[in-house]
Image (cartoon, rainbow, N blue to C red; front, top):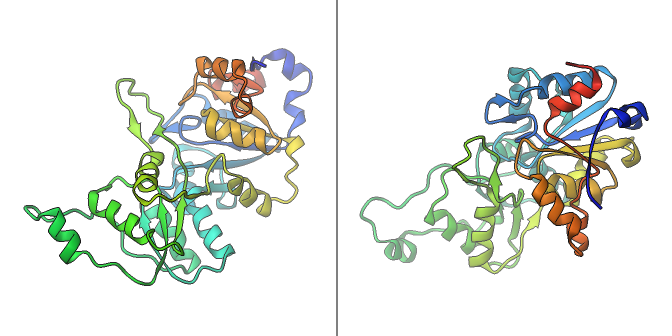
Length: 310
C-alpha cells in the first residue's frame, strides 16, 4: 500500500465534505520556529471558515496552552485555547487523572511547569543546573547532591539546559520504583529548514534517562493513545470516521491518526519524506504499514490550492 497524492479528483468526489474535524501538527506543518510555512495560515483559516473544527496537536512541550494560543495569534492562525493540545498540557491532565499528590522533578521547560502550576501540582525549580566551575563531579554526587524525598514523578520534556546534574537527579529519583517516569514524547529531532543541521528532540533526553535508570517511561505524546484520549474527552462528538490527521512525521502524526481510525495526510515540509513512505509501504512489519498515510502533499499550500484559496 502506497500513499497517493491528493488531487482535484479527490476534491470532486467530496473529500472536503468527508470530515468535520482536522487534527493538525504544528512544527514542520504550520511553522518552523516563528516562521509560518507558506500557505499554511491561509489553508488552516479557510478550513475553519468552512466550519471545520481545527485542533492543534503538538508534541512540543516548551510552551503552555496559553503561550501556543498567543503564538497562533501572532502568526495569524485562528485558534482558541480549548483547541490547543501540547504535551505540556497532557502532563498536567495525566497527573490530575491519577490524583497525583507529590512533587514533580521536571527535566524540561516552562511549558510543563506552567501547566503544572495551573493544575495546582507542585514541582521543583527548573532552569540551568550545572556543576560549579572546577568542581569534581564525583565529589558533587557524593557530598553535595540532595534529593527531595517528596518527589513522586520525573517528567522528561525538551530541555535546552540539559546537563549532567539533571541526568543524575532524574535517574536517582527513578531508582525508587514508586516514582513515576513520564515522557512528553519521544521525537528524535526537530524539523528545521537549515539542511546541514540536526536539532536533537525530546527523545534524545528520554533515551538517556531510560538507559541509566533502566526504566521505561509512560509516553503521553503522539503516537501514544493518551494524546487522542485528551482530545476526545474535550470533544466527545469527534467521530474518527469524520476526522483527518495532518502531520509531517510518520512515526508520530500519521501513526496516531491511523491507530485512532482517522484518515491521514502527510505534508513534506518537515521530517518525513516520500522515501520513508515508500520504505514503510514495502515493509512487512505491521507497525511500518500503519505509518503509511492515506494521502500526501508537498505542503498545506497545495491543499489550499485544491480548496480554491489561492
